Length: 287
Length: 348
Image (tube, rainbow over all chains, first blue to last red):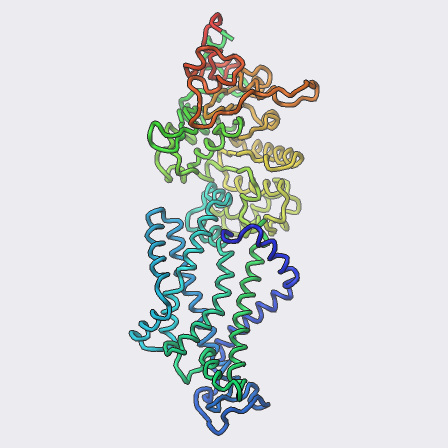
């Protein structure tokens, strides 16, 4: 609420009405996001071994009835690699967003509600963390813990929370001034309940949009990390790495880069829209 | 006028239990003695409210009136310790329990269960993300009710407050209600806490005239049924007439007048009260211009010496600019802070 200028929601509402009119739209978005997560959870369990083993004889075949998305330079089925790669890409992106949302949320709540002294300390600490470059930090982390998905997830979670903390702190402070918060306090609602039942739900408006957009960008950052050797290592499938590998063959075997690229775009769009749908439901009650 | 001085503590028979004294006599629901609210700890700091004392008997319905900036809202909020930046001096008692001077703890003990408060803006007073039923039930659950009982009681409270088809409407969100209906929900939340004292801070100001009347009626009915003590804060004297038994008049941070409602309307003792009443448009008299009180209310920090009202008072005397009038018994038996009632007749 705080960061949305009064004029903007009105303009956005106009766009939404045309674009997301009716419940079918939100159902499709929720369904698509749910499907993506389901695939990410189930796929690695059912994926054949051929996802990581090479079969040079079948390399660089175009899309066919047998290999819908074609095969890559190692002769692996691109469809299966995209599906199996959803774990490294989507699940870890969700994990990262969830982890830093929690860290940022705790910091924001303490800063906003803990009084001026704690606010000062936590916010300066936030500023300090904000200055840490993610990539450099991740490299250091990989050096310490060894390269792999876990290093990437931890490094991203630790460096990405400050924006959430800053935003949410302001939102919480704003929400705390709402009459219904005071009203609840007057009627004897305790601090914890006040925070979780009234203040937080009413402060997440802008954050939801950010988190939704972050799922897509985190997929990209994980790809970037795996490109510089910090994230998941070959041959384990990961969308960003697949795009990178495929980029070299874009003239001869476009499918290698295009299909994982579509997967990234799909996930980014679906989660951004999901955030919008949820926010719209939440905003319905606000004037 | 002189006769009243012979019966200093007398009250009109209509409200026998309400001794307008500063002391917290047993049998008071809410009492303030010498309460001042300042923006800081030092003597020189801005005082929003100064030296206010009154007590309200259980079951009594009192209206507090005054212009914007007279300190009535901030005083009401101080009863529940809502403005933490304000320094409260004096003593605030709920029943026989002193709530002031103990920080948050003192106030937390009385919030909801003993004193509930309703604010001006009903839409803002409701959490936009919770159904109205859930919000009423939340207050009930704080009182220890189980989920099922709370929901059931919430529905019956909502219907008691005049919300039709309450069982279905309880599942609706605040924005699906009109202003008047929202204020009924807010009232239901306050009543759900089963308080002894209800403070209503301009509960009808944000509503249109019809909704005002309906909400006031419903507020009157439910508080009468429960024998609730009510402190109604308003700047609308027409609201006072139909609702309250007693009127407290605030001006520039002081309580200047405290009388039974009939006396206030029949023969207002304080010149300020009289000015307020004369400024109400009337159907039976059509003056060229509506009478007004000349000047504006002085802001905190620019309040005059002596009686705060003297620069605007048509009866101002030399003494008024020098001496702050202490509360004295009013002719009708209440209390009034005005030199017209402290000076001997020949000096006026």
